[in-house]
Amino acid sequence: MSVNPPVVLVLASGRGERFTASGGQVHKLQALLGGRAVLEHTLAAVRASGLPWHLEDAGHPGMGDSIAAAVRATQGAGGWLVLPGDLPLIAPASLHKVAMALAQADVVLPMHGSQRGHPVGFSIACRDALLALSGEIGAAPIVQAKRKQGQVLELALDDVGSVTDIDTLDDLACAEALVQKGTLRRR
Image (cartoon, rainbow, N blue to C red; front, side, top):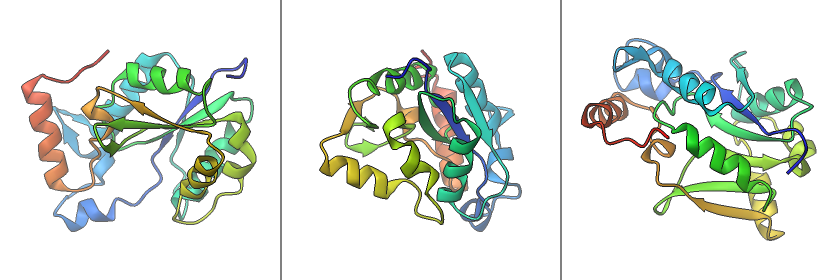
């Protein structure tokens, strides 16, 4: 890992069309979960992690554009953890685990069981490729290229919050049920 710590890039530029199409009356990041906005939950977890972070909410046309803009805004970072803003149940400890795992590989893919989660970690070696991203695809081509080079680490996380994103009203209801059960790992 670089001398500088990785920066958590909280992506909040998307339009949230699937959420409103499912009947949501507000943008998914402003939808209430346990009495607070989804994005507030995500940012609270990021702050609690103690890692440096950057909120990218400029309304870019695609995921790739958002990631590239966030990397450009954090050029001194020692790597990046790409965290969509709609993961309100992410545990701060999961952010730390991904950050630490960047010492072992250029890309860290969190896994909860067999499901790929977030945040996806990228080392400083990925900077130029991240800066070149544009469009809707996001960083998948970088992950594929690094996998071919043997530079992808799949990191098991015992954190259902790493895979609990809010794309529909049903997703919000499932997240609310997890909050009500009180079974989340918050450390």
